[in-house]
Amino acid sequence: MIRILKFLLLTMLLTALAAAALVWDGRRQLRAPLAISEHRSFELQPGSRLRDAVLQMRRENLFTHVRQALYLEAWGRISGEAANIKAGEYSLDPGLSSLDLLSLWVGGKTVLHEVRIIEGMRFDQALKIVLEHPEILRTLADTRAETVMTALQRPGLHPEGRLFPDTYRFPKGTTDVALLKQSFDAMERIVQQTWAQRRPDLPYARTEDMVTMASIIEKETALASERERIAGVFVRRLQMGMRLQTDPTVIYGLGELFDGNLRKRDLLADGPYNTYARAGLPPTPICLPGRASLEAAVNPAAGTELFFVSRGDGSHQFSATLAEHEAAVRKYQLGGRGG
Image (cartoon, rainbow, N blue to C red):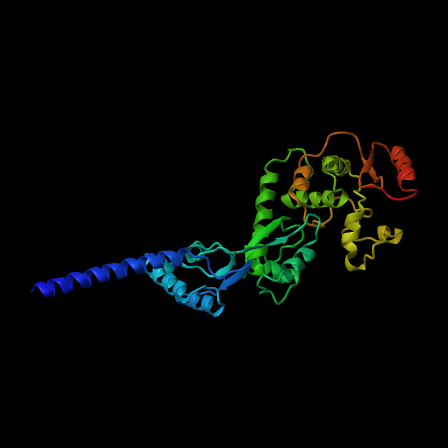
């Protein structure tokens, strides 16, 4: 009987020691660095389980020892986190442990890529940037404007001026429609916020008029200090019944026919975007305006200025009378045109 008791005690002791050794080794392996010598990415496909992820890590030789893989899978099941891993692209750096890796997968801390839509771009230019981004999943086979707007659930809506210029961060596999929808929604939100701050005496019947004015301001100047002055010139012209006579609208109307040189015949040719030939705003925006230009459109500078001409250095000379404007044109452009 004593022998049996001694045997049982010895067995229990050895089992406890073995369990303690296993726990100690497990903790050490889970905290040990993985076999990652330089920064790299690792992608978990949708529907991947923890076992799939561990097998993929083993195939890519990212464990320093097979025990790391076994302990990682075991700990994931014991902790209940095996069911919570999320698909996506992950950034792996030297020094990362198995526990760190599991935390990344469970937290869904995926790599975020960037796409930048720049103020003053046309809709088609922004669309091209989105569609050609290597990490955006392309789903639009037909890229005609009407098809894209239908995909954005706005069928029949003209696309120009409908995307908000910004830098967008997204995980790999985000669809083109999802990214465009994010930009579209951002523009709608900012347009409504800006519209609510407008002055009551502005010559805008609807938000589209404000966006169109902002798009003209965007194309006329890159200087923050000039936006409200240019808005003031164009608002006063609209209020007085003067034609806007702004080159960017004519250029937009020419489309692919514009070769970089705006000619007199272009200014004389009638068309919906020719603000030399027609009064009022053009029928749509001519680019994607940024927030600053939208805010300038509803906060035009007060004054008497009705003309401006480029000085050739990115800035403009503003004038209140035609005589002053003609003198400025002679000085700065030697017969060129101003706004």
